[in-house]
Length: 191
Image (cartoon, rainbow, N blue to C red; front, side):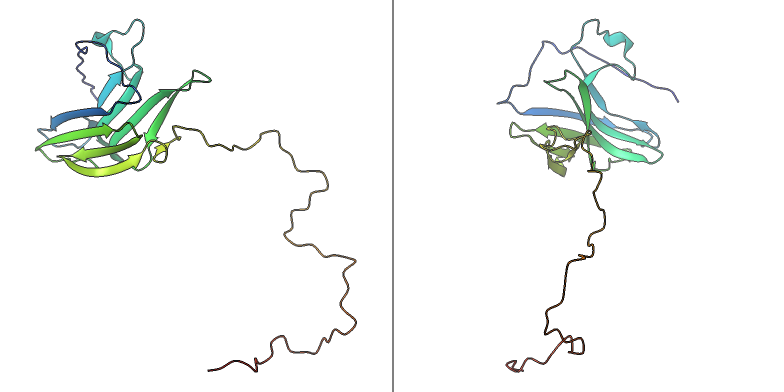
C-alpha cells in the first residue's frame, strides 16, 4: 500500500493551557470513498530535529484524529500521547469506543473539541457522534488508578482458597431436631 502525507508548520508555536479548550477541525472529501486507508491528522510533537518533509509512521505526535478504515478497523481515531510527569515516559491513550467514520464520496467535517474540564466531543458534520471524558473513555486512562496490584504481594503458606471450610469444633445445639422441616408455615401471614 502506498502512503501519502502532507505537512505544514504552524505559523507560530502554541500551547494549550489548563484554562483553554482545544479544537481540531478539518474537512475531508474522499473522492473514491473510504475502502482501505486513513484520512486522519497527526499533530507532531515539538522535538529537536523534527523535519516535516520526512514524516513517517514513527514521527512523534501529540494528537491523532480522524477517519481510518481497513480490514477490521473502521473508526474515527482519537489518540492522545501524553508524557507521564513522574517517569517522563510517553504513553498513547486511545479512545476506548471510537465512532465510525463516513465512508461515502461526500465532504465531511470532522471536529474534535477537548474542553478545559477534560470532557470532549467528536463531531461529524457538526453532529456529536461521541461525547466523553479523558479520565473515563481513554485506554489506558489518562490518570492511573489510585490502587494497583502489588507485584510483590503473596498469599501466606497456610492460605486456603476454598470459600467455606468445615469447622472441626462446630457442634449442633443439644435440642437440634434432624427431622424438623426446613420451612414451616407462617401463622401470621395474610393473603
